Amino acid sequence: MKTTTSPHTKIYVATETSTLKRLLIHSPDRGLGKVVPSKAQDWLFEDIVHLDTMRKSEYDYYVKLLLYFLDPGKIKGKLREIDADPSRAFYIPGTPAYFNSDRVIDIQQLLGEILKNDVVRVKLTAAICGIEKCTYATQQELNTVDPHELAKIFISGAFSDDRMLFAPLPNLIFMRDIGIVINDHILLNKPAKTARTRESILAQFVFFHHPVFAQIRDKIIEIPDNERHFLLPDDEKSSEFHKCTLEGGDVMMVAPRHLLIGCSERTSIYAAQQVMKILFEKNIIDTITMIKIPKKRDYMHIDTIFTQVKKNIWVLLGSLARVGDESRKKDVLHFFGSEQTTPDFKILQFIKGLEHKPIEIENLEDLLADISRNDLGATEPVQFIYSGNNEFPYGEREQWTDSCNLLAVKDGVVIGYDRNDKTLEAFQNAGFTIISAQKIIEMFENEDVSPDSLNNTFITLPSAELSRARGGSHCMSMPLLREQ
Image (cartoon, rainbow, N blue to C red; front, side):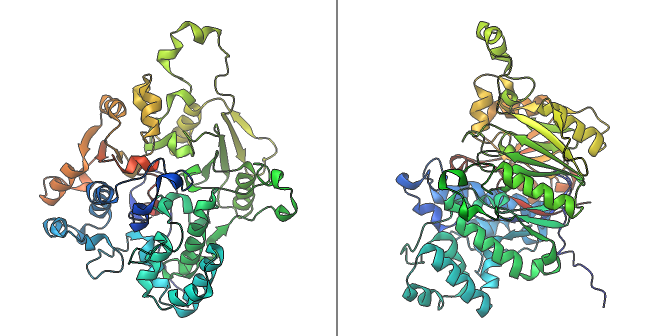
């Protein structure tokens, strides 16, 4: 019998800006409130955060926006009631009042659902207890916990009574890093840091066991480790030519047959090569462009230095682009300095069948302009908007707080942080309307405007606490379906 794909289980992403239809997220959980200063950087946060503020005053606006754009029936007309509930039950998977959308999906909800299966529960509990070195008694206790509560424990590292069992997973709010949809396939990523190992196991179980992904299980791609990695000396295991690490912030599906992969602090050249080999062999795409960026915490992933806003518009960090920093180019030191100011930045494009002859692309703007014109068929002139309006020192300052890390919910409508004033000024100069999440949500609720009617709009999220985590709206999303 021929089976058809339900619109609620379809997986397909071929661009960065087509209208968003479904995505995975994870709201800040109780584990974030247990990050201590001495472990913050080990757990990949720059600082400890105030959880209540991060949730109620910041991230909840992100969820509301996504629901209004993707699944308005879950929220429209209910805003006053939602906001009046101090328990925030609307946002918490496993509660009767949870919004439970099949378009804006929290991975914690999916995890709780697969844990209702006794076989999956026993296997996953054993795996987590094994890597976290828990006692057999703890494993037995976990097997008696309600499935949705167990999902919370696996993610937060703590019981509801505040007993800490193992380290939290504060980075799970950055869903982009656990997987990426490439056309109708899902690439499971391999986080670079030990702090994210448990995330990988949880994601693997969700993707291979939840019914949402049942029809594409044969299209889930896992990246193999170096087959002899266990024989390598320890000092060689960490080499980017041997280690196999890749995170979703370094992978962008920019056009149906074109993928970008960043080689960065978090993604190794070896992993990028393995992904290229698999995708070319499976004939999923024709072109892979690898962008090698400096291995600095400042940059981390390529989506911290550029993202796409519209078919013909990109936001990027000027100091790693062709223009450099115009204010510094005017001083005497620039003329006596090295011509190659960013030796660790390199762009190579590989075409299927011609992998042995990559094309070197001189700068980021040339690559992005070519994608807009030739891959996406943009007819309007290609525009670049620079972090901090490309003014010193604002370009670097605002890139640090994710001025370049934007999520397009549709072509020309993006969500980003409110704190990057100079970048917002640059967007305004480029013809964008800047509006706060709170204001636009009120307008949606009052039917003063509809999500469908918006164009050239930058929606700002409050971000005092979210920005401490070093990730923006692009990082906080894993798109599952965009319009073809």
